[in-house]
Image: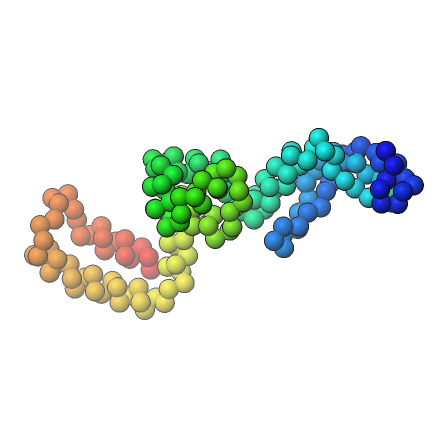
Length: 176
Ligand SMILES: [Zn+2]
């Protein structure tokens, strides 16, 4: 097959690193391509087009930290929710959840939102980061309020017999 770019070289089937750029993120995927031995012009063979698209999608998501369709389905099932319930839980349209689960690329902020609301580790990391970023005086104020409020709260409500206020306090101290 003659090269359509330079018109002189021959296109050879070869495994190569193919460069891509999506939303400003540059990365490479290895695939079998047609490349001109003379000018280096490269095309993706027709029989590789679908698979190449999948490779690119997977690598982009991996590098950008964006959930794949399978991971979104798994996250929803872990929560025991239907697509409709999941959409409500996330505050998005049901159509969005359906699209994402079919493999339509979701943006980073939606991906982060899903992680934050379905992944305990992600939620904990966010909580810790928030505590680090908050002014310690604010946290101290909160501790004082809870300390003062504790006897009042104890009198005002009937708490479960296994509930101890100590645990609440130690949790607040842990933030500091
Ligand atoms: Zn060429």
